[in-house]
Length: 248
Image (cartoon, rainbow, N blue to C red; front, side, top):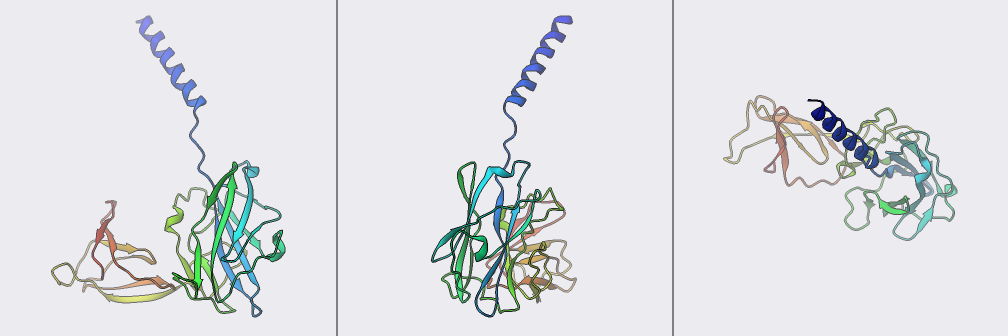
């Protein structure tokens, strides 16, 4: 019996040693455009969001703002928490960067342990493949992916981000959905053309909040302000995994 105990203890030591030698890798940070707007003269202002900045701020050694016509490095990085936002203008850059208020493509490029990382590009206005119009002077384009310093367990992927026209800009403050949405109403039919009544399913797709049809098959849901062609939606019941469903 003593021999068995010794072997078990020895194996446990090996497991603990290996765990210490191979710690779980820390995910790379996410740094992207949280909000962008223009004044009446076309001067731009970007709220840069960051998440997964752990204790070692110096691991992110540089951040670049890229437009369709150039690329410029941020002078000083100001990470104050695990997640949050920082304001960036032309004065924050080593060289001037032109961003066309009528339409452009904005890409955030950064280096983490000398490895290049990029965030989801923001394409708007008259630039090719844009899904957003250009914002008016009193508006902005904002991200619904919240770089939230109060939520240290946000495991959303950057592919789940939604950019929307925002009629209530919140530069310097973490975003919410105020001013970013309209309302979409309609009815849902099944594959046989029958009205989907008394459904227990929740529906979702990119650019819409989750919703559930009313008992008569109609629905009303908040929709982000963007050009969004819905080709399919997803449905789920309780904690079941979402499955693809036909378009409506």
